[in-house]
Amino acid sequence: MANEQSDPWGQHAATYARFGSPFTGYIGQSLFLSVAGRLPREARILEIACGTGDLARAAVLHCLEERRTTGRCGSVVATDFSPGMVELAKRTLAAFGVPDVARCEVQDGQALGFDADSFDAVFSAFGIFLFPDRAAGWREAARVLRPGGLFATAVWRGPEDNALARLQMAPVMSALPERVRASLPRPPWLDIASAEGLTKEVRAAGFVAPEVSVFNAVLTAPTPRAMWDMMRDNPVSRLMLSACSHEELAAVERSVLSTFEEMAGGTDRPVRFDASCHFLIARRA
Ligand SMILES: C[S@@+](CC[C@H](N)C(=O)[O-])C[C@H]1O[C@@H](n2cnc3c(N)ncnc32)[C@H](O)[C@@H]1O
Image (cartoon, rainbow, N blue to C red; front, side, top):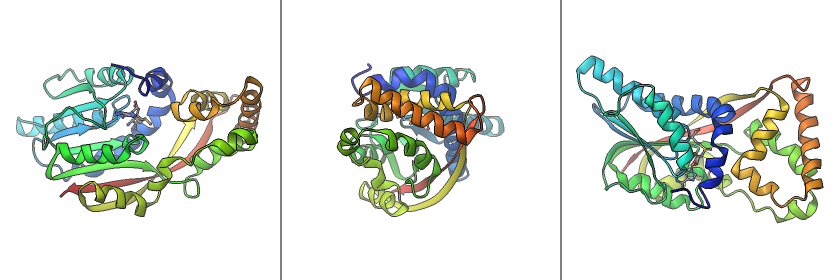
């Protein structure tokens, strides 16, 4: 069931599928491939906050290759708390026609409906890092994972190391009225934007042997206007912009569009952002 928290993600799902997941999907699939060589045979794989199901797609391909070569394979469960996102993930995975290998479920990652020790590997790309109760997200991931099981997550780096975060927000911040700017809370995920902060948090949730690596990718938006539409529609930035009057929002839009048009070299040119995130891979104690 959609609720107050998941509704905005459901409303954002179609835009995310067009512009967000071609980019984060590549990163999510790369996260999966960074772990695939260490998976046990017939691994039971869970994805938390799967969005449109791109990481799960790589996991299904892994299982199908295993079945082709050994006659048996593991399974994939892709979960998200937004029914709209889960519908899109179902479409992504339905293309394989293997309901015995892959399924999608609506599940809140802060309170998963799975027994302890149900999975051999748990993934979450740009999911748990956004949860209001992040500690519950890590804890649940650890609870459903068997001892020694693999955990992998992708988390954005902070503005100082990540041009996407910096360039996206600079024209917004410079045009926001002081009243709104002063009332903005520090984004909670900045606490885990550093390798040290991320490692400390996942260790506290019961993971051991964490390995953190940097992964870089480029986000391409087809036009400056498309990038602005995606930002305005995103539940995280939408909340921030909701404090603006109509005129104030128009001023932010002008600032963002003029900056992005300059970067792109025209209104009909793509605008590209270098982005940087951390991959953390750990094992459950
Ligand atoms: C930035 S998107 C990432 C989606 C996907 N993993 C990707 O990399 O493209 C964040 C996702 O987290 C989901 N989400 C947010 N809070 C959640 C929660 N408490 N439980 C499960 N999913 C959640 C949203 O619905 C959305 O699909």
